[in-house]
Image (tube, rainbow, N blue to C red):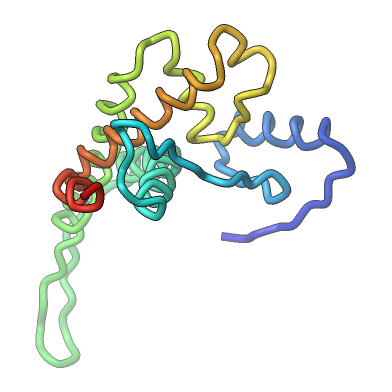
Length: 177
């Protein structure tokens, strides 16, 4: 994968680039707009650690890549390969390996899908855009019908649900003590 650095002159160019990337299905991270990830420590959905909160956010942000890889796997034809020679003969199992990888990707996608369903339908798209694409709460058109604190609460609830579904429930309880 190649990485390119693009210098943008104004915010309009940045918005155009983000829009084109999303339409093309390309996941991108805008360098000049990296925001500080924070969590509401007084909330009952606090994970107990800022590091765990960020780890869970990054797990969620990989969702578009998970879907793309899963779609690519389903397009490929799978066959058994036999490797003979060298220090003995061994049978590689690409079908089995791909099935295990596919099952893991599907498990990760299901965790995120089930967790977003805990957010009320009116807030789902806004929370999704904020977490996945790092859309600011102050942008017009998306977040206009609720207070910023409401968006923060539902975002934290979504991240908490993902962490619980990933199996971090006991760790969260330990960190809260």
